[in-house]
Image 1 (spheres, rainbow, N blue to C red):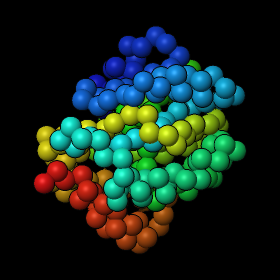
Image 2: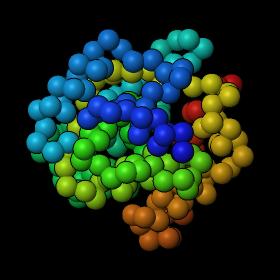
Image 3: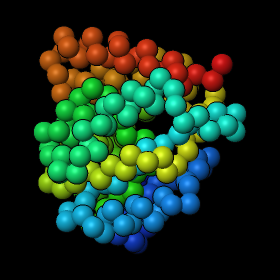
Image 4: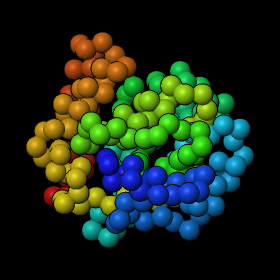
Amino acid sequence: MQDWNFGYNQAKTPYVTIAHQDDLYFPDYAIRAVKSLEESKHPLIYFSDYCEIRNDEKVRDNGLLKIKRMLLFPLKIKRYQKSRFVRRRVLALGNGICCPSVTFAKNNLPNPVFRVHFRSNEDWEAWERLSKMKGEFLYDSTIQMGHRIHEESETSIIIGDNARSKEDYEMFCKFWPKSIAKVLSKVYAKSEKSNETK
């Protein structure tokens, strides 16, 4: 995650989006992000819904996307976006926030945002830390970007060597007793299969 932190620190603007090289941002993404951030009293992050891009086709609805939208549903209610309790309950059941869909309000955030600890869950770990802070998680439930899924992606490689399940368990332990975290990590692992391209 040193490259993410490096890129983040190169930006001199108050708002920063870490764009992955093969993801797509739709025309209104920046407009909606800046408008939402400017209207917020103390923004932490803005993030939008997204679609997957598989074999150059936009997939707007599948099992994984439905689950993530269900996880994030409480944050569609504006007053809940600043609730630490609600944000943590949302993250306690999994990582519904797509990292490249996030724009950071740099002036309100710690530096570094990402810790060099995980291979796959570095973003979920960051959201967990930020969820404890005073401020707002600004969720835009419209699809404003496309996240590309392919065999060579780091996420697909990590899932293939089972490193992801260990990281998932560690993340669930931040919210739950170990016995519950173990069950949740097994259930969560099943959703990872939807990242496979074959």
